[in-house]
Length: 219
Ligand SMILES: CC(C)(COP(=O)(O)OP(=O)(O)OC[C@H]1O[C@@H](n2cnc3c(N)ncnc32)[C@H](O)[C@@H]1OP(=O)(O)O)[C@@H](O)C(=O)NCCC(=O)NCCS
Image 1 (tube, helix red, strand yellow):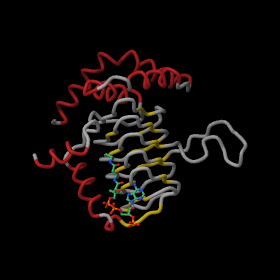
Image 2 (cartoon, helix red, strand yellow):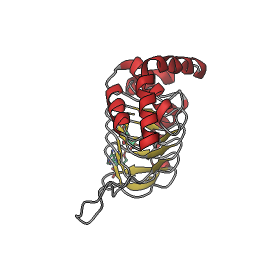
Image 3 (tube, helix red, strand yellow):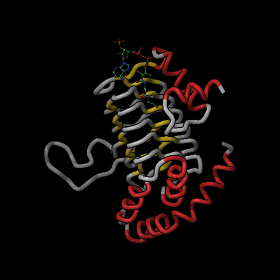
Image 4 (cartoon, helix red, strand yellow):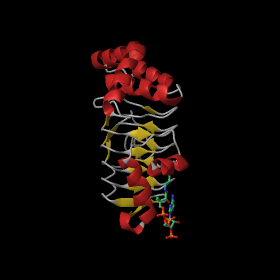
């Protein structure tokens, strides 16, 4: 779909989400409280299908530091904090939760992914501390596979394999494998660069799955 049409649809959804978006943004800016934002993000995550995606794009455009009309956030997925940034053509699957993150352009995040606000939100060494939210950046063109857990920065054009746990900064153009993840050059994974990167290039719809992506590549 052309960006201009997406923009029209997303701005149309402002009519629906403005009570949530405006109150979240005003209360957060005036008091620093994320209570209304948190309630709204979780509530709006429950709307299924395309309508849900456009509603969420409108809400996040009103609340996140950076967000574009081509953001697609899947069913039951949400940004946990309004301090995040999402670049152009960012998409998530379902049941994904994103902490305090700076996400580059063309990043595809699969379902059941957790992007944590760093490694030490509640301290380390057994003593609980007040939450500390560390920003995690996801470089442009990266693909975070199903069920992965991210707690360190990800470089550009990386692939995080399904179920991997990234605990250390990930160099650009590498593939993360396992728990804790080890990083191998992307060239070692021919199928990853074909599937992942071509899906980015052709526009990712997070609620469509593998066979649909293959169909799209044939279009
Ligand atoms: C990363 C990925 C693209 C690599 O695919 P591939 O190039 O076909 O790689 P292979 O299956 O040949 O695996 C190469 C090695 O990595 C290992 N490996 C691959 N994926 C792994 C994973 N998720 N966890 C642990 N090890 C993994 C394989 O066991 C193999 O190890 P070996 O060389 O010791 O035998 C793919 O495994 C993957 O995880 N894709 C993500 C799919 C997804 O999340 N889809 C969601 C919809 S968007």
